Length: 308
Ligand code: GLY
Image 1 (tube, rainbow, N blue to C red):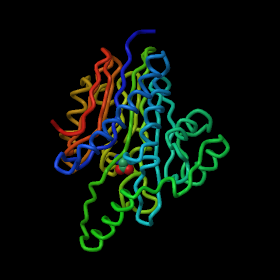
Image 2: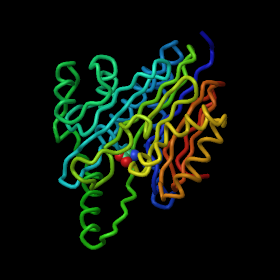
Image 3: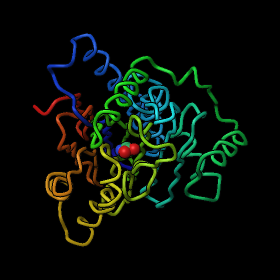
Image 4: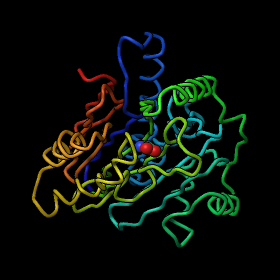
């Protein structure tokens, strides 16, 4: 056991501008990030493991209506919530993922339960929800997942679709966490409502192991946020791990290459958080902003939203 542990979280990347943010709202976002950081870090401080820490941090973000996951999940094109989540243990390479679920309060907890008890890696839709029932997880109805802000965003997107065929929706959000625990083990977790007005049945990168979520003690743990289709096509999280493993790049070099070069080359807007086995942290994004926070191995914490 060591005294070295660290945690990073994100609450989504996208068009986040100072000019469109009120002071009150910014304070609420910062408090939400602080609460999630504290939920995960408390576990690490008490010599808990990285899987539990990332799950706790992500659950806290899922319970906060400001973030696009769990309670704050966006509406799809038929006015429903379809959520995706994943978790991965860097020590064992065990992983759990769920996609297209609508009634489970904490999708990341279902992903963790899937990893631990289902004998499978990925469960979808009604099968995932039936498994959640068998594991006594908490369910919520449509009213719980309704937020006025998300409903208004969906209505706005619907209207824009009617008048603009090549509509580009920039209301991307997702939450995630990566951690190194005092046993030297890495973990990553990601949860999302996807993209506003997405097609019914669309699955993003978050639950796809290697695309939006990946952890491997040999290299790093990564959780992504952004335009999922592009992150799937570039297998972003695993690519960062591979660049470290096969090419000997540092965490920073690998993240810079993927986020600022490879993703940009295919218009893949978004970002990611990553941590390596030494506890180095990267919070990289090529969008206007990314809700993000971390506590490094020296106990120094940061909470940031914008580019500068
Ligand atoms: N990055 C989340 C999604 O595209 O669903």
